[in-house]
Image (cartoon, rainbow, N blue to C red):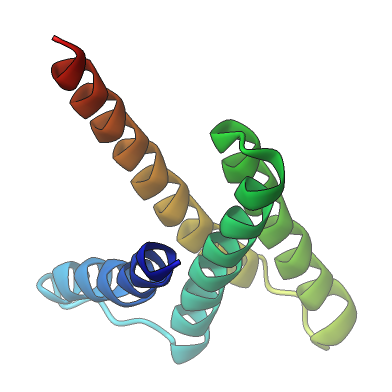
Length: 120
């Protein structure tokens, strides 16, 4: 349980910090709204991933369902709640979802490699 909490904290804090700090080097600026959508995408995806994985025990389903949930919620919010639909807000949320999906996939690759080394 503590590992899951630490993993989520790492995803919620480290990825946005690294992503945006690297882009600030080139003097890019970000709208606060897009940053909030990005962080929201990270939060929705990581929480949904953990919930789906607990139920299904399937890593691929967990990643796909969590990213689909982020897309659905981002689109729902933009279409039904915001007075002006902005596709860039949906894209920012999906960038957050992709960041989490990539990190989880890379972590799974490292875990598989460690298991192979232990078996030898």
